[in-house]
Image 1: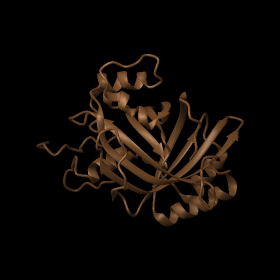
Image 2: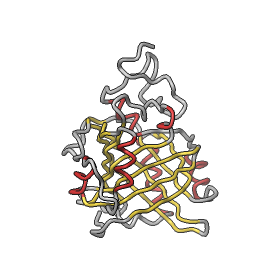
Image 3: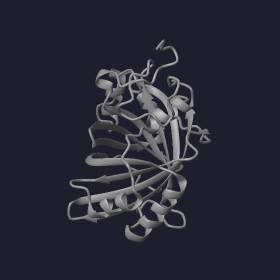
Image 4: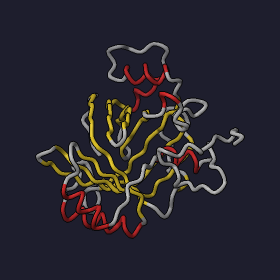
Length: 257
């Protein structure tokens, strides 16, 4: 993906619904979407809708975000890169039920070193991000990568977006750098479908859900990755896929439950 070489700060609110599907269903959904929705303008590949997404997820030393402890419950901070682009996005995601609020700032990858400085330049576009991760004692915890195909459209009620993510892999973070290689595959027999829209569920998405008999599920790629890497563990009888918003039984390795 090619991006303009300047920083942009944006804020967005949308509804987001996720589904966990098997590879066959994911393939059929991709084919269906390619017939009814335009390709993401930043995509490439045969259908011009594919790209690699890599994110550094931040957490506290005691994994307060993973454990959804107090005020850490509803927000995630990450640094995202598309493909091998020199520019990255500093992002904060906040969720209230299905409503997703996102703030993101695009900066050059070389500027990530600013995030370890004791004093932030208030004129730097990423100063807000540095201020918040310092207050919350955040540091990179996990690097997550996956292949995404994305289809989009403009409607009378705002933009809509359908994505299918697979080949989800993870590797422990090594500071504020993106490591080469995707690491170990987290989930081999599932793909993640995401629907995003501004107001009411679009008719085309209702048709998709009905046609493929999809059941919404709260899914966290970060939580899946942290579990797969052994940074945390699940109680006996639980699966790595049991990582939705209501799963309070997930434990740190030191937990005695």
